[in-house]
Amino acid sequence: MLVTKLVVKGYNMIMTTSNLYVDGNTQRFPQELVNIGYDDLKTETLDTGRTYLDPEGNPYPSVTTVLKILSEEGIAKWRARVGEEEANRVSRVASTRGTQVHNILENYVSNVEDYLKDELPHNIQTFKDIQPIIDKNLQRVYAMEVPLYSKHLGIAGRVDLVGQWNGQESIIDWKTSRKLKKEEWVSGYYMQAAAYAVMWEERTGRPIKQLVVCIAGDEGPQVFISDRDKWIGQLKETIAEYKRRQMWPNQRK
Image (tube, rainbow, N blue to C red; front, top):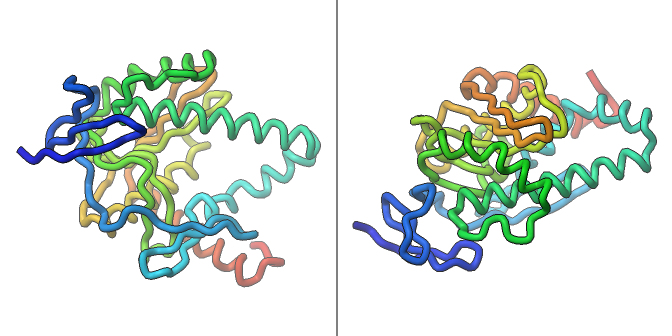
């Protein structure tokens, strides 16, 4: 059996092809980490958003930067309605909390032993609401927080999780929300996950069809599942519109 040393967030671990151990104890989620050929990608933050550089130095806009054009108009109206100061406050709170809950989820799936240490009670409760769903459906982990890029799509990004969900290899994306969402409201999330699926297949040769959006929310957890191919067309249209706006920034459809 292949055995290698691995360090994750300060914990000395031993990885095998079937299980991950910390201090001699079998952990929650078996890790079968896939080599994508590089350790990380450099990033640059420009006025237009975040850009990733591939190993040859070629720039790719981030998928989140590209998909922001889908919500620009709605966000602008909301900011005008509530005022810039309140909008900035709400955005900061949501961003901070989203990062904190995301870190709990990442540590939990990484098999970190003390994954709730120093976390806020509200964030812990939000995690505990979605924890049974993760325990029931996540069987294996192939990658976490890995930077990916697609020459075919011309975009890049950092995928939250690639793993086996309910028996199928999946792109799994963590989200947080104050309120419950309808599925028709998460098309952008699906397109983001579809982009990661294309990037993953280009980098590893392993196709993934299932997209899983896990939302840890104040009103309860939600999981939305869809097929990659359903969203590729809309994703490509959005990328084309983003590129058009970069060339002619004063024009809109």
